[in-house]
Length: 120
Image 1 (cartoon, helix red, strand yellow):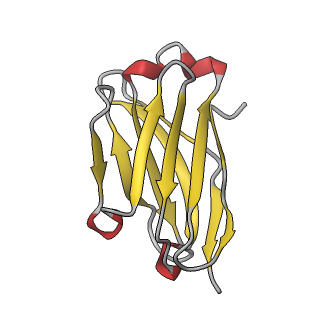
Image 2: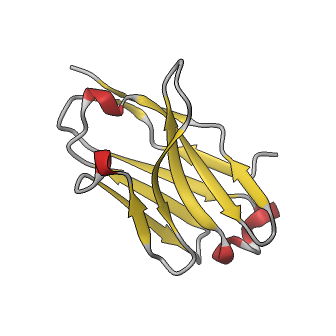
């Protein structure tokens, strides 16, 4: 059973928007509130890279490449995390992965990934 399930990927034209969602499974939802949640992306031949993260206090962090265009948010009651992506560029094309982690418990969970393709 996957602990995290992403949805919302697809094909969009440059300048368009997509909203990714990530749902935590029941197996990890009881501790969801303490996890740092993140979105990563990966293209073939390259390492997976952090795009945005949000800590248990709701404080977001973004890589420079997406600042001002992407917004990460979380809903602890629904055990969901979202990534609103605006002004998309072809270089945003990648498989996007949801991540949950807690350094004290030494746990990390990944979703199966969702493809985002930005192309005209």
